[in-house]
Length: 282
Image (cartoon, rainbow, N blue to C red; front, side):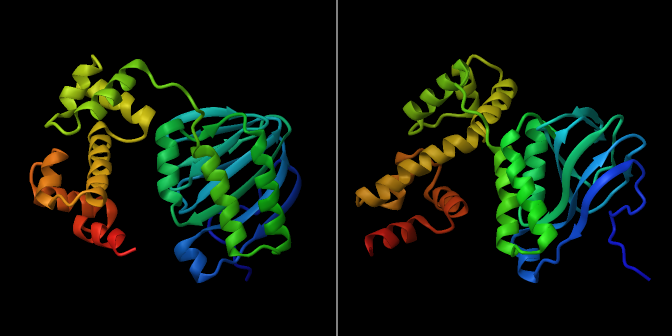
């Protein structure tokens, strides 16, 4: 009896041409520490091509080269056309189908930060990423690695990571005036006992609305950003002065030296004293 991995459909209707399916065997190290492909192919399809899954523990990337593919996932329906990328978390029910001729790459993958990347991208943009013609080279590279098995775990992982990083990269844009005012206020007053409410007031927005747009534009919450600014200043004081930990904690508006030490260790992985000692021993 031939073994068919979960998530593979061998009797798909509507496939006019296909290059694959090619399967990848990842090492234990790759499964634990890297991104790794599972299988993939390049298809030319038309109606009645339909794929529907309830749940499957993997992630799925598409790149459409010609035509259109129609998707439904997590309560959203959309059409992906030429040069578009689609990223699905297959643990959620999903369906995709062709109405006319459509050519596309696809591959399943797992590993490393796959879930975190997918969750972050879904929160930011959903599953559909239009107009990425530069991504075709990465999908073609993955197809080559799967077809020839000439790649190793590292090159396969790098290929997946480049695609996810491409989707995660935000276009450079100017910050909105409220966020600019908030950042300026934080840098001017981080030594004081200011709160998120105080920062939101400077932005002339409600705390909820301000926190939402700040996270959207900066990538972190106002409270976390304020903490990061305070810790950056604390690092300078640790390296450039002989001030005590208690003095530095007070200078950076931490409520106590113990709170400063806990926060510093949580963010940096070592205590302020160890950080100072590490640099002074160089």
